[in-house]
Image (tube, rainbow, N blue to C red; front, side, top):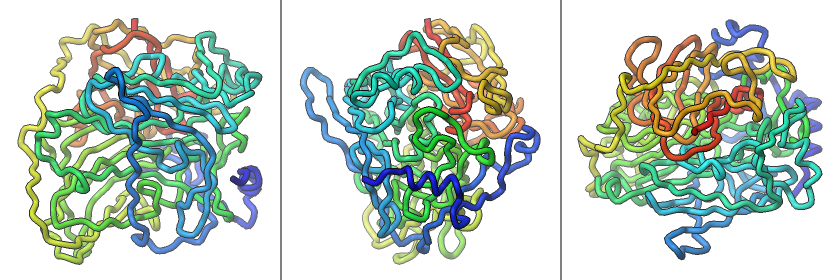
Length: 531
């Protein structure tokens, strides 16, 4: 595989005007950023000529087979390696991958049946794996300094993850060389999870280069509901990227080797947006469907781009998006939307009924927050009439927690704002940038707490280990899309959101952070100690 160095040098120099900067905003003031639309960040303009949308078939990521199933545990092996992947038709793109594909292979598991995934790092940098949304013991949660080093790279541990260029050191870091086994009990509600790199200071470029994949948890109760299944259940990882003239991925890293100096160039401090929308690693794909209900398991796998999705027929009709699940599994009852906002790392489980679309008709999934090419996401073409015995029950789940505000033993408040970090400008929680050696919050196992989260600009806030319920937005009731149990909540500019959760599961060190990946890398992360 070709080295990315030439690409990144050209990228840094902007040869041939390959990288036009759209709506470039520094962090001169949080107020200026707050006036921007939900696409917090600046868009990279790629240099590769792009084909019209809806030409490439939608890929479905392959399901990984276990290498062993003895002792009631499913064991998997994944190799993290460089690969040359065809993302744009006829163009090879060097990427960092799980098992050579983007997205990585999907893991399918059953509720309560433990899984062990052995990751082997053959990349040129340390890595960390986080199962996003997983109820995972701390030792396997993918803490940002618990590195897996490349072979023969012990000497790099100090400056590539025990701390960073800012001189931080983490005495609790657990570093291994070449391989690491991650143990996931999966004692949790059935849902769509995803796994991605979580290395301190370098999460954003690692995900951008390809380190992301899906993990689906199922159980018998959900299987019995009669929701669309088999080929009519589609996982959809939506992610934006930009491509340099030679087909490589453009990204404005200060250190293109991603070894020593974290961060991005000034115009992109608020987040990096691409000008190509990928679904399951394909640009603006099209999928042939029956005239029937389909279950769409949607993940926003973008670094910083927000979407507001709608499904529109060619004659302008909007199809209902019937939400049946959130980040942490099924809702109590379905919620019907015409449009659905989705922030980075959020997942929505929706059913769309194509039975009213004429055979040969097309349904486009549109991003109302996009402009130009980024307004299109993907399309469905309705191919044939079929019998459809799927259904959407009025009651989906009865096992949702019923925490009440009066159950909370404490209320905490956190401000997510731009500010000064050790290395310059960045993003802070409660006025502080991330420090792995500092405990920010200590919570007792089993306690119920209410957290009030306050934003300057858009911040999708993610809690590790636990799901939560949204109690209020701006002092008002939650919005329709806040239903169910979530692990990531989208704070809008100037907004205060209250969430309630119970810290159950496991003791140990966890995180909460903004899932705008550039914000996260530039300090917007904090430690949560469960005792």
